[in-house]
Length: 402
Image (cartoon, rainbow, N blue to C red; front, top):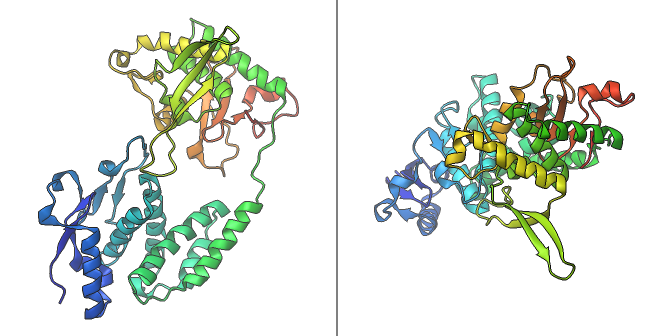
């Protein structure tokens, strides 16, 4: 019988060792060493004063907001365990906490790992009521992933997540299961090779088409008769064209980020933007700053946004440059407000991750909807629909690498 021992760490409280799947499969001698090692990693619950600030490990709903590191932004912070069978939940919970502590992963990564693992396990277990967790085999896992209509990149993420999960159970916890780690590892290697061999690069569009996109954005940006939202979008496009920053970073610009200094040696006055990158490689990494040259168009876009943002109530309390509907704008919200301006959307490249594709709309003119699309990660601009007629031979699949 395993004694009831509750432990906590820097992020969770109410962690019951009685629920630890590793202990249930260990011999008594191994169990004592395992608990001793855990207690060197964790603290006894009674000795920790900040229990109220941590996450309840025993809950079937984890809100990971308290463990977001400084500068980290996560689109999804809530993990729901109720969809998993009760006997599977402890395996997954203890893995997630182990993986988080060992690899110092960000909340977004933890969410992706959990989502992939949950889809695989629930998919297999629901396919046959007679299958139990400890009866899942390598073939079942591989068949579930390979039989789905997934891109090689998606398969790579699935195999990575499930391999890490079973590696923890089999290698770290010494649990005997019907899963061959070598086979899963081989599958992962094959999908990684397939991803590398895929030519996912998109062709560039003609420079004259890009100039027309820029010209329309500049026109809208400078037009006092255009609605606020359209001018915001136009300013964003010009700055993304000129700076090449991610949408996350652009939406995090502050009103005082634009600097103007004189170079003493040449007597030339230049403008540049100081900003901190928001996409960190590790959840505990410190955000680091960049100074990037600002062209005349960039300065005009920045100062236009700085001026028109004063129409937003949020300008009274927020120093963010980009405001919409009287609130600060995240990448997710930016996508939402852009989508809501569209009257029609070209359904091209639907196989690509729509989380990274954002549709940008200009006002209708002479019955046309001016539409461009920005790729959040790379800054690619997609050819607008109206440009297909203006520039024969181009299509909405072509893009400009800026």
